[in-house]
Image (cartoon, rainbow, N blue to C red; front, side, top):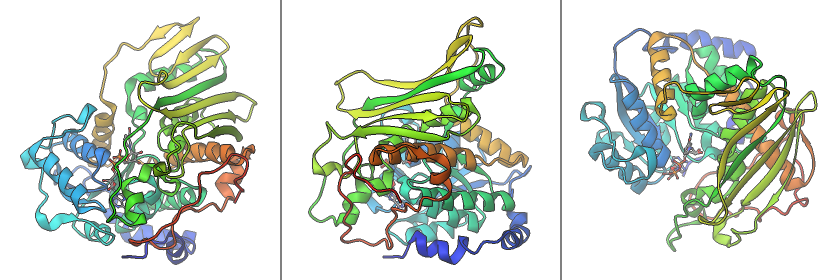
Length: 440
Ligand SMILES: NC(=O)c1ccc[n+]([C@@H]2O[C@H](COP(=O)([O-])OP(=O)(O)OC[C@H]3O[C@@H](n4cnc5c(N)ncnc54)[C@H](O)[C@@H]3O)[C@@H](O)[C@H]2O)c1
């Protein structure tokens, strides 16, 4: 059991972080800023949260450069960290999709038994294990807390999206991003479309006027249900929730935050500005069993931008085989339209035909190359904004009210993180009923 309370933590560290303190911190640790700049040393990586993405990200970062060594591993659950350890060591990844049977070359896998950690106190042990880069791939509810501690230790970060689940978490995260910048700590985030040349080229063309003036757009993550990891009479509330984290607001932020973030990020990238407000609706129709915790299964949100342009968002998770899926973005301009993953339609019709990359690998290639070259990278603010864009939509749908960005970013006190993290009872709020949720 350990006290991981963000509120306590905020009081102890971030609330008192004046510019002078931060500058002092920067001065005292700047030498750590880019330990591998131009060097040929090994880059030792520690992973936190060894599920599908944590395991996949280890493979990606190792594949990105031979100087990378997977050095330490931590998951809240011993069985999970051992499962990942075996997959990485033997190359047997039974997961689906891109990580299929890749594993890590022997010479890049240097995790000894004493550098495998679990339970609540395992995170501090991992931070002290001598790593240069940390991969944060736990449920996003933990992200602000883990990020702060890693930045304070002077460790460079690959942070999976989303980076928080509520406004208090986004602000806490943003303080860490600023601290990281002052200390020269690198931050790569899991918004891999930003590293994909097809998206980059298309959005650059949109910005150069290929579809005229942007008038609005649509974004979609209309997908199917995900996993559920069952229950066990031996598990406490807390264990059940952390194993089935997706279905609990305090851990995932709901699927609009956890999954739709990629599309919200593309919307903000295309627009180059932040929305003024969001107005949303939604509910839970298919996934009504209490085992699915307190998240919804569908949302529809309208985002309004400063000049009155409107973007419409739909996100949904329904059983596989029901309905059709659509994941992507659509932009409307005065001279054409675009699917920003590679198409311009209209007067300046164009299609991306360049190099295809696997963007989850490419982001790590860019990260390690920049780290080694001493070319500073910090994607923290951009992903914090995308995270807040999703939270704004969720808050609007839950409350039934239009919500302003400025209020959410600067003033909302919504903080869903538990006061204390420990095994045992952990009651959660009921499933939100649209219009009945209060604003905080
Ligand atoms: N960029 C992408 O395309 C992409 C794709 C998949 C997942 N993700 C993100 O990666 C993150 C993880 O998703 P996943 O699919 O790998 O989930 P997962 O459930 O497979 O893995 C999460 C792991 O974290 C562990 N965990 C839970 N609480 C922990 C804690 N406090 N400390 C340490 N470990 C803890 C769990 O036991 C589990 O093994 C999420 O934020 C998700 O949004 C991003």
